[in-house]
Image 1 (spheres, rainbow, N blue to C red):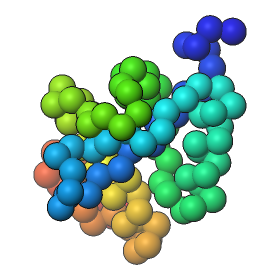
Image 2 (image 1 turned 60 degrees about the vertical axis):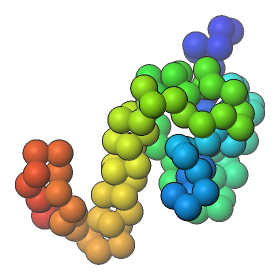
Image 3 (image 1 turned 120 degrees about the vertical axis):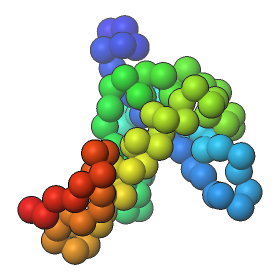
Length: 105
């Protein structure tokens, strides 16, 4: 099976006080990807599934900062994770959407 057909996963970390940009701390395909996802879920770390984003991020070396070309992609993922977390915590989404409006479900 080719790598493009296997599961892929990338773990990022970012500390605004220490890091210039998010850092790839784990990356892998197949069983390694499943282990990365399993560890994240066990630790309560949000998992975001996006095939195109993970394909780009898997090309980076572990320990490297994401390049500026991927800042927007990672920021969009982070915003979605924040929105989902807020909704789970509060029962509705009052954070602004991309269009600058808010929705309550």
